[in-house]
Image 1 (cartoon, rainbow, N blue to C red):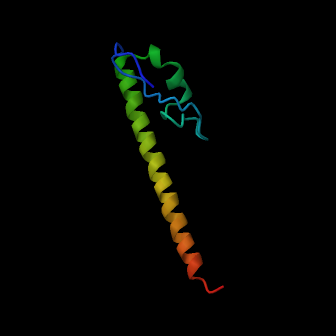
Image 2 (cartoon, rainbow, N blue to C red):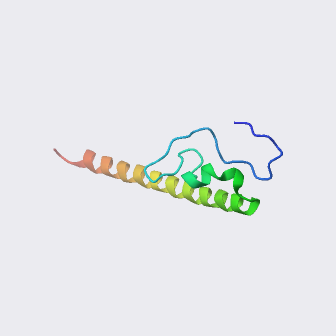
Amino acid sequence: MEQLEFFAVLSPCIGVCQVNNKGYCKGCFRNRDERFNWLTFNVSQQQEVLRLCQDRKRRVLAAARKRARDAATTNDLQQQLPF
């Protein structure tokens, strides 16, 4: 999604507007308040939102990697069972 260059801080929106089970957008990781009020936030508030989004994304990706490792371990153990 292309954005105009006259904004000091570009919106993190990538056009994937779906909410996860914790209320965060699956695309940009903002909560409802952060999404709806983005244009009213000053630059430092927008930068803080971006920092929070990066932290949320990092946690989501780490949890997904852990689930994948756990599933692989479970699958390996099941294949080793004699029955």
